Amino acid sequence: MSVTRVGFIGTGIMGGHMARRLAQAGFAVSAWNRSPGKAEALERFGVAVAAEAAEAARHADVVIAMLSSGQVCDDVLFGANAVAGAMSPGSTLVVMSSIPVETARRQAELAASKGIRYVDAPVSGGEKGADEGTLAVMAGGEAATIEALAPILGLFGRVTHVGPAGAGSLAKLANQLIVASNICAVAEALLLAERGGADPAQVREALLGGFADSTVFRQHGLRMIEADFVPGGPAKYQVKDTGTALALAESLGLTLPVATEVDRIFRGLVDNGGGDLDHSAAILELRRMSVKRRAGKR
Amino acid sequence: MSVTRVGFIGTGIMGGHMARRLAQAGFAVSAWNRSPGKAEALERFGVAVAAEAAEAARHADVVIAMLSSGQVCDDVLFGANAVAGAMSPGSTLVVMSSIPVETARRQAELAASKGIRYVDAPVSGGEKGADEGTLAVMAGGEAATIEALAPILGLFGRVTHVGPAGAGSLAKLANQLIVASNICAVAEALLLAERGGADPAQVREALLGGFADSTVFRQHGLRMIEADFVPGGPAKYQVKDTGTALALAESLGLTLPVATEVDRIFRGLVDNGGGDLDHSAAILELRRMSVKRRAGKR
Image (cartoon, rainbow over all chains, first blue to last red; front, side, top):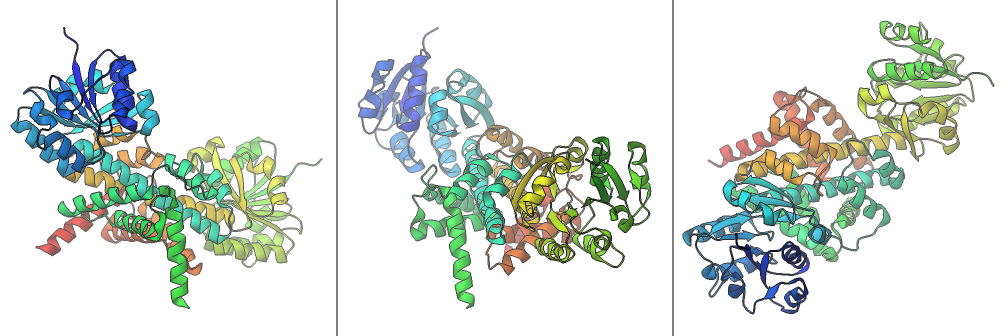
């Protein structure tokens, strides 16, 4: 059996680690990155560097894209002289960027029209997860296609098939929505405790291990108490996610009252200059809203 | 040194286990319960049963109250012929019921006027935690008083001193607020995933271990997916907590936009007949809100 050839499009912070893990596992990897230095750094692991994205994809059995946005994926994968045009019928395109659900569905249709299998498989777990192969991979597409990708996607972390094309992006969006909402919930509770006269650090300590506990409560709660807002996850990206979720909900006729307020809190934070702060800085915006309200009452 | 005498007021589901643990540890426990059968069941562990609440408190060094509400605590502890009147100056009253912050503060002042030390120490962890001594105990009051109570409170679980009198109740309220908000956040995200065409059970599976993960996500998320709304924590109690939190926030001039929506969701659930369902049934109310909205648009 011949070695599976993988084209890797986008070898930035996440993609660089992922392409390296593929090469180290024995796959024949051809990589492209907009700024070539990041791809060239992978040559010592046996990765071939392509001058054009289409070139990295030309003889690949599987092409993986890890680019910065849905728009960049559209351009690089489906634009003129782009990746999809160079791929062979029967090969598979896996988009691992976080992109809107509608973008994933449209790309799946475009791919299908060229005889290319399509999977959207965004991840969570950050650079550490990419480095160590412990990402959560949320895969949307045909079951058989995703099963066939197991030797590849399994190198990146734990793979879950969540539904048809677009469902991977939807799962990632659900993840972001819960994180954003829980950050605001923790911020409101700590603010109430603090203003009511309790010691927020001790309240956090008391609640560990109980029903209020979560990764967000532990990590972002601590950031709020220590006023440590160096990102982490910048608030401006949070706004992008909550906005995407609300637009999708609107198109589906769904009312999401909590998400609506969470979006408003993060937009306020960004409008007030906090876009580059960690998203736990939602507590600053909640403080601001209360101060404004009290001022208005005078 | 003589054995510490503990008066135990309210030996229901939680208090029964706690009084038993005290007696088993060698404390001299005198117990009272409104329906006497529940106290008498403790006699085989060496607990003495009192005919009146004041009688259980009369010679006690420490009196613990585990009653159903702030109002019942006011009546039984501070009403006519009540517990506080029978307690000696220098003894300690520990209210472990979940009561409003303002009630705890008022009771602390009343107790102080009689020379009685006061601690509010609500718990979380349910009957299982009370049985096994693994509750989270959130204690508000003087540090020295709470330290002196360590041999007693330590039998119930992990004790954290969270601030002055009232702070225990405040910590418990913060706990309830985070749980209620996170339940709604998880419900909105799963609803979006489901309506968008993903498999919610697989989405839950994919998100385990990531930043969206929490006790609520695991337990209540599963209940939502399986439509298992047998309580658990009935929604009607959730409404009591969110209402208490919002009233306190209002009195402190705090704006809590997420809690406001969460309260509205749970009130809607109760108004629509779901008060006795588990609070994970918030997802039913969110579905109803969306259906209503779509109907209104036609």
